[in-house]
Length: 276
Image (cartoon, rainbow, N blue to C red):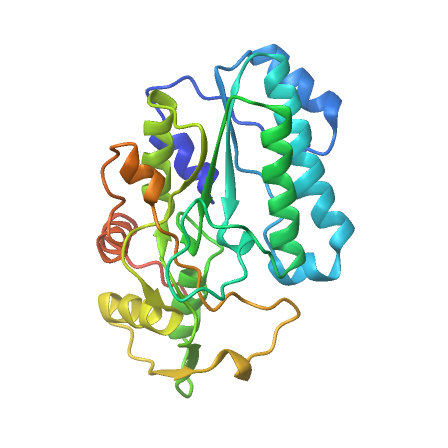
């Protein structure tokens, strides 16, 4: 999802896309061949196993992709002298704080997904000193999949009010906003960790309500508690990310999530599935 936006957003750069099946981040030789052939100045590492509940049931596969895969990307990039910009997640935190998490808060993942992504961060730090790790959260964009796309699909169907969780809070973030940040980081590197979610905060219910209002979706929404929808992997109650490092580096603020949502919907039109 992010990769599609990056290809479009980074047109002034020479971009080489690496994806399955030609390049597998868990397979060192395919990575080495791709990077040796292209000799990039920077590698944006956006590949990951992101299905949180699937990760919980398949921990070895999650660590193979998110931890070992990240180590292989970092090693291959370092060998050719490339910087690494690696994407990470709010799930490295436990979600228990009552304020947004900043980059200097200690990670404490509660899920296999979060632990595997934290291990991936550590691998990038160890194997490629020239790196930036960008943590993002509540991402949507292009054709999905995302919470936004799920809500639009369900909203197009007739039925009783949709129950949406109202006790988890975060920063809804568009791939366009993240791509713009990554483009700037290519030109103005910030070493270490930065948080790259949009500004402003909302619960999932508030996010869905904003989407339905903007699109004129008539199906009703009903707020509910996380406990009403038990999942294999616990969800963080607090996914808010403070962009402290971007502020200290003099970067402009990330767009407010409402403005980013409006820009996305204006660009894509009505994403309601046809025939739904």
